[in-house]
Amino acid sequence: MEGTLAGRATAEPFHITTPLLESWALSQVAGTTVFLKCENVQPAGSFKIRGIGHFCQEMAKKGCQHLVCSSGGNAGIAAAYAAQRLGLPATVVLPETSAPQVVRRLRGLGAQVQLAGQVWDEANTRALELARRDGWVYVSPFDHPLIWEGHASLVLELKEALKTPPGVLVLAVGGGGLLAGVAAGLQAVGWQHVPLVAMETRGAHCLHAALEAGRLITLPDISSVAKSLGAKTVAARALECAQEYKVVSEVVEDTEAVSAVQRFLDDERMLVEPACGAALAAVYSGLLGKLQAQGRLSPSLASVVVIVCGGNNIDSGQLQLLKSQLGHS
Image (cartoon, rainbow, N blue to C red; front, top):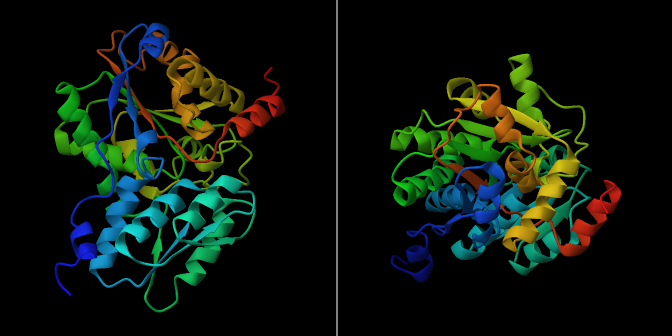
């Protein structure tokens, strides 16, 4: 029936406009104003709901009967949240190594959970098989134009809040959906000259490897603890964006990403996962200053925006475990 509650719910986006906070602590480290775009407070815990919510709404309009998503955690939670809002069943396929709280959250949102393989790429193979069923639609975690379109909304919010372009935008790269979406957003608001610092952890550095080779590269394995960055091959569009826009690709060690998570928790009272720590490490490790010294970024940055992508794959126990595994006290 037209005009039902479910029908009305699809008209509004499922993401919220997130706060842009000035961070005193990170500004002290960077020597310039650092703003945090707090995607960690999205209803599904990460920026993923922007693009995946938009994709799922569009698929629902086309008569989709069942959503199936492969995920390292965050994309699955976004898909399950969107499916619940749309009144659709969802199946999420995770690697067997996934955090128990992610599985609990997915089931709490009403999704069916399947575990397959050791890394996302293997879970994705299973999801693609399931998506062959009649009426089922595959939800990519990062690789679809509708997903990038949804993520671009983040930059529209930045324009509204900041008015003037920042000196640099820092983000983490996993499969590359956020990078592709942010690039589209920068183009849309006329900020395509703003440099992007694309952060990855070693062992999940599929964009960096592709840029070095000048073509898409498949990593032999994901050895980083930042499992949410764990795609062996970056989206082709993300590689194109990195070649078309001013993108500085940098790789940090797991120890730097986890150290950034701990420092951010102490500084801002927010717990984010190591994938997000990779972006924060650009400030905490002094990397931005090095890039300025090398002439790869302007010597005077008007402001720095760090996209705090959030993430559900962390709790205090896991942070302690990661620190002990990596030799932190």
